[in-house]
Length: 370
Picture: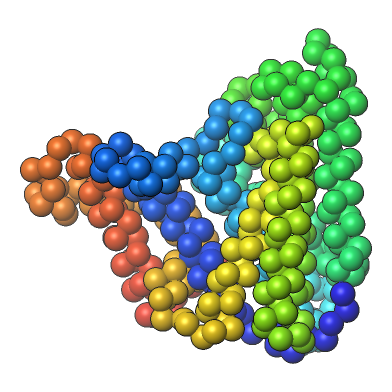
């Protein structure tokens, strides 16, 4: 797919979808989960039941939140790299910039996961992090983006997922043999215990450690494919159609692969990556169609306020307890409700404070960029 870019301006739909994603991370997901079993409304209970992570195999909507962010990182990368090239920035300079960003995100991720950070006891530091994964995935995808075409990156992404499956299937784990995909006996956990410094989240395993980085990076590679579609010179309708086809293909492939390689967020299984990439492509198509093609932007402002400062709010919610602020400000109003509803209202109040904080920054045009 060698299409001539017509614009490198950021799209409102990407910011809005990123904001929707961060809404789930910064309080919206907790609010929905707490509603489970309180209203007596079946559909609300069903939606609330989607906001937890399965212990091992399986899938819920909550498992989709982080992969969606990785996918959108790739989509945004296509715009930023193309814009840089249009301004005459050389490939080495682009790589240096992304490498610097990767290092900063890795350091911020270590601080986020370990605060208060004891730098004198490195063996008890957890080095795997969400931010580090984003930084590494973006760096690897940039290297591929600058060197390979759309089709080549597609083949590389799919090829990596196939290789990952074969590695887990064929390489034996001491004491467990080959093809073991249990929590205790999988190759990913064994490798992380062998090569990952510091502590692992689940003691014998860590889903953000080294071994799952490569399949997770495929999310960002596939996101860059979506970015190229949006940058192309075709009509908005055709771009939406391409995104929908790509998304449907990813979902179908992920569900079929699930028969042999279970959908599993902890392992970042190939079926999981394809399923969530497909879902991300379809959701991006919907947002793009409504916001940028049809021009219905006003409703998306709520999400865009969050999306343009996604890194900031992710960090801030780690160090500022908005739920405690909500309790101090609003408990006198909701204290007469039952205890389960108090948790719901407190979570809602916390998120309102988060959004107002971001809105003030938005009005003052203060954005944290790395």
